[in-house]
Length: 556
Image (cartoon, rainbow, N blue to C red; front, side, top):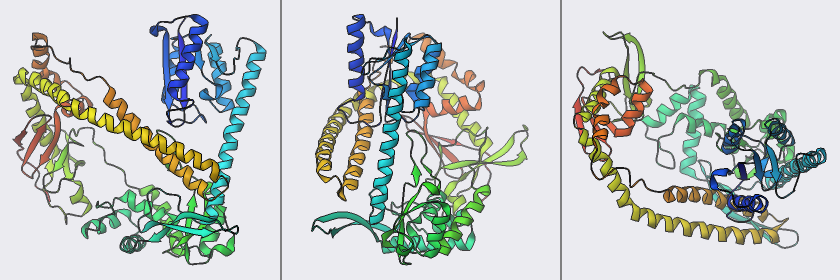
């Protein structure tokens, strides 16, 4: 009999019902019931950082796939809500397991799925689990509404044009409550005003992007503004002046308004909470405005309601002609090819013309040159068909000397050994950082108990979440460093079989599909630089290899 153990936790904390503790408890249960089991009889599935609100989790999906293949006979979990906090999902799971003749064991509740009473009790427990989840979500929404009334900034990356500054207020009982609010950053705010002005003039994200690049107007991180960053700024209600037009807009959209119509004073900006839907492993997306919690902030707004609303209408009208990344099934060097003039990536652009072989002609063009309309970079475009053939030809030549591959792999091994000491030092530093964060979380948790019902609750909770997220990233890196190094990748001497495999690389390369060729090129090439006449191919662990590309397209 083989067993599957499933564990889940929404956030990494390293204590309590952690992933490791859940698995250990399940192992102890199995040992008490079935004696010592070989590891081959246990299948472990772990989902860390995933909510129990749905079953869209990678390890859960893999577990159910294995269940349908009859890879195990029983599913064990520490507690019912580790599987799901949604009654409907839980009921479907139990029915499917029953149809597959797979037993389900929850060691905390001790339910027997073989009896009608046991299944009924399990469904009842699942209902209460879902009720707990929905009640928690409702408490969070209520807390957000209370925080919204204060117009405070809850933390995170501040919007362009503003900075976060501490503030405080005295309550009726004489206590001092400290919080953060937004204040104008004048130089950045001039850029924000310019972005709104240019978009209203041109009705084009691309033209605004081109204008900013041509005038070398950079973001707070010193990078060029992209269309997507510009759009994010234009959609952010933090710049909207809280006037009566703004009030009517959000009231008509069904948003939850805090403070009433009179608080929209025509001076301060808008603070909008619960704007985005964040799901682990998925792109953050904007929620429907009916889910927004909108309040008047303590910071000044910069754009009247009618103008901001007009911008939103223009953005909605432009959705149908939004930018689509061009695709080419033939181009092989996307993500490898860089401009030798400015360092930007070069992307393929298809034409409607064909060459003598009947192939559609495509060119590689510098992204900065395209975005600035040739003002910030004027490098010549490259004939993509000829450039791809030249690169492939140079890579195929490598197989003329099979020992190159052996030297290449040995160099990788030596590099791994050389990096071992660095990895050890990094591992110690990361482990210390995790410990320090856990201590800080423990202290904040203790502070949260005494701060219940005060304005500090939101700030403390937000800080705890930030530290949790930081520890998840640190733990991921620690796991990467703890993976065994492939030091036994090569035998002491190259064997004839390896030489023969690499010796046939050239003929095998010609039979590959375009996608397989892209993968093969990325296995050897770090980057390729185009200088307008020649290409420099940088192999991993090797010096640059220069190749000329004849008959390159000279279009500006």
